[in-house]
Length: 281
Image (cartoon, rainbow, N blue to C red; front, top):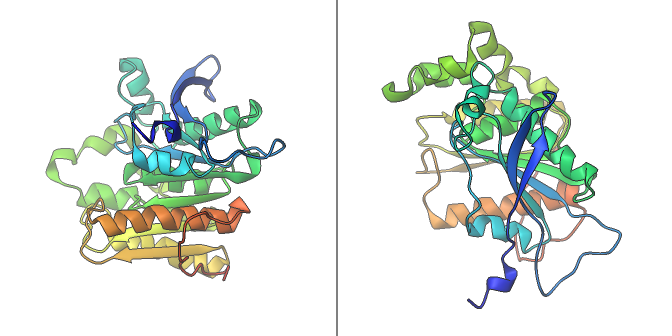
């Protein structure tokens, strides 16, 4: 295969969680491009991906949307936080009553683990996720200070609203994951927009019935008013999960240029026209 030399192979890593003696798992993709080499005294930026579900899993398989980042000098981390499937019952049940806590802690812990091991640049830690992964991303940005920027793709900002409006098949799924009524409020990033401290870009389909566009708009408006760099991309005709090739491509490219401009301190290699970032441009 002529492009094989461009493909970063994932390293399966085991890292300590915030619970003493406990481990969690992730796939780490180091940056790789045979035509370029990083400076000897510079560590790469890191993009952490939070998978959806949330009780799903990510796998170390070829994904060109991952290789997009690694071929352009980024390290990429795909985290199977506590609650993911594939590691046994105890592992999956770590998320019971603790969605928005265990997943967030594990993503932050793994990023810090890579920093401590000299693999990535602590000042350029970014995070991205879609749907339930977008929720973990937004919660990480609202309730922790590990990351310097984030991207939410149709992410859940209000888990109370999600419970009220979700489809019948998953109508009681979240009660096990969240627990009490108080926890629904306390763990919804939309109720704590004043706690965000770094740049955020939001992508939202206007026909989304699972996560209504109002959630992204409310977060966007609050961050704009607070003076943080923020951008919102809305797609006509897209639902929960983008399906049009041009929108998938645009989403990937705009994340790259957003991170590069706000925290990356580098020019992107591709010819990408950046969208306007509020409180930045």
